Length: 408
Ligand code: ATP
Ligand code: MG
Image (cartoon, rainbow, N blue to C red; front, side, top):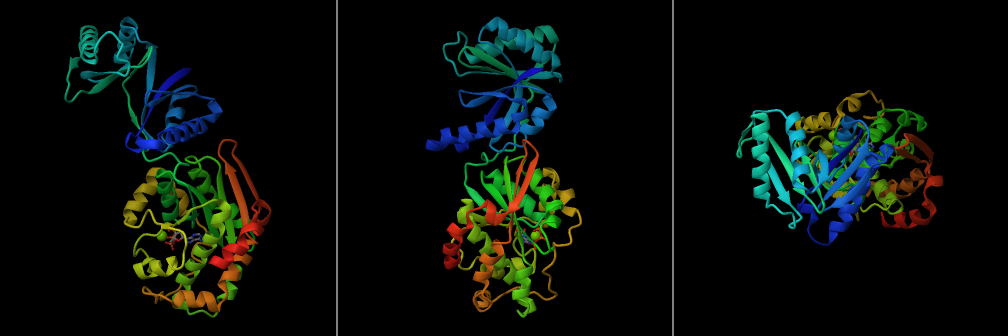
């Protein structure tokens, strides 16, 4: 069945020169989320109109994943003529439930012969006469919306909340440190909510990339790609790192490893076109995430480090993970997760201690050497195609790594 949806975006983000770009990307993202149904999308007076043939519930579920949508509703469309509008309003009122209602009429086309108030009054009287429902302007059980556009009218009642935020692709790209635990998928979701495109970077200890590739790490990336379209995951082995840092003091291990991850993300950023690094850190959640140890992580970075979960309690993160549907997968067993654990990690690493070990142990060189052994995984949610190639074949590493290493 062919249906039309009216799709509204958040007004706040629309001010100024960015508006056309914002709408263009939003339109692309809506189209991409429904690409298998080949929707027709037009822009009409500050909203999108989507005409699509397919299962209504599926369309609604997919629209609910598109960041930047404030709300959407299945709408009846008719010519902007009073008789035709009245007929459609009666159809909508008939399938609507509740004892009371109100009509919310708006004209973007001021040449329409009735004012919004006159139209609402006339349509309201007709609904009362035909259904016996009561008008309640302050707390109606349902609201029937009538939007008069140029030449056409939209009539709808069931508004559904979109996820809000900004369209993915309008706020740049970040390298997202992705452990596959509970926090990092939620952090990626929040970065996407603000319009960023994450490139996932995961460090693993297994002898080959097959283990992380066939684990919850890839499953979670696939799930999150519903919001962003084609997605990149980089799998980075850290066995060489473990060998190289064998003698380092145990209490510094977590902070040293986290610095190594940050430096790797930074080295990869230029070739990935990323302008920032994001993590699932939450302040003081673990010894490695105290203010002092976050400082040791950030020190020397030329990119902003973004931590969308910084102020979240674990319970709040878990609640969000359940809501966005990553929680169950995050709990799946994955042996690599806690490879770097130490009984007594320092909560206040001295400012220069990590930088000193980076120098003594030659970690800069190790970053670039490790990158040579990375794997590039791409996933296309439209075709469900997953591809993996050695990173050195997939990216032009030679062009950027020497320069990146010099800067680390
Ligand atoms: P999560 O935070 O995802 O639940 P976790 O709690 O086991 O996993 P932490 O030790 O809290 O992980 O790590 C904090 C952050 O460091 C993660 O959210 C993630 O951004 C990054 N991180 C940890 N381990 C890895 C890894 N193996 N690969 C990439 N990033 C990692
Ligand atoms: Mg965590």
